[in-house]
Amino acid sequence: MSSPWSWYVILGTIASLIACFWLVAYANRQRASESEIKESESHVWDENIRELNNPLPMWWLWLFIGTVLWSVFYLIYYPGMGNFDGLSGWSQEQQYADEVAAAEAQYGPMFAAFGAMEVTALVDDPAALGIGQSLYQNYCSQCHGSTAQGARGFPNLTDDEWLYGGSPAQIEHSIMLGRAGVMPPLAGVFPTEEALDEMVRYVQEMPDGMNTESPAHQQYMTLCIACHGPTGAGLQALGAPSLVDNVYLYGSSAAETRISIAAGRAGEMPAFGDLIGSDRARILAAYVYSLSQ
Image (tube, rainbow, N blue to C red; front, side):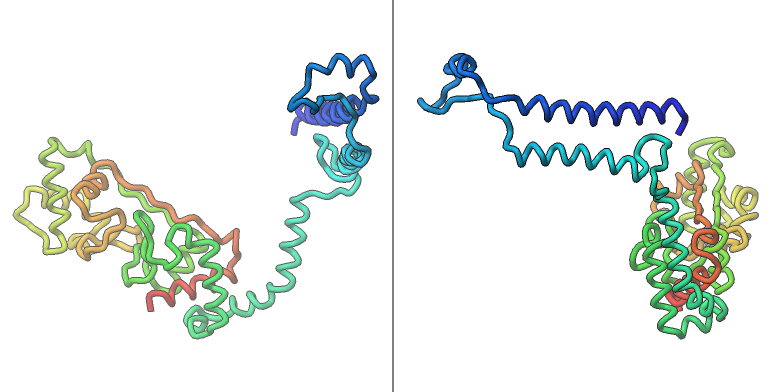
């Protein structure tokens, strides 16, 4: 942090410790004098319970003093005073790095051995699939669900429908480098709302066959063919989904289809290569591949 903020933390911490020590000392005054007792006779409840200003028990007092002193030694030994690193030199970043290094030394050879195998071979290895399942639950289940069946906007990984292809190499590519899919908004190209509604109906009817008599057919052949293909089967190289298979990423209703066409969609699969490395990515790819086999 910057130097002014560092001094703000240091002075604020020291002031707080001094205030705590003063409060303890102030609370440990001598027992009430006779005059104070007479003055407090109005503070009586239930006939004989009188409120007096007596000091804390000594064990309680020393407990408070001990916590203040402990705080002083703690802040000298560990970082807690602004930019002062403490005499120990400890930091949570270094502790994390040490733990990662220790885990890598213990498990790295095992991951390297699995990483040298082909994905198709790993699918038949129960130990590799067990590790892959753990990796999936840690890194993938938040979006694709604990059962890998996806959710609105997140593909199902257990079926045979793949936006970018379901081969081992394509799955591994998706995990390592991520994917970014964009459906551009097309609301501005339709002259009327009725024309947009006609395109919505046309797309929804495509699983039953392309209606070449529809007024929207020519619009499709002009605007959509480059990504979704002349038959609507999609293009995996671009991540453009098939429009003829009754599998919908955002829902099949007319309202959702209208949003997709008019406002567009933007989906992103984050890259995990730098986070988990190539060996773990291959094990994870084997597990994902096994889900659809």
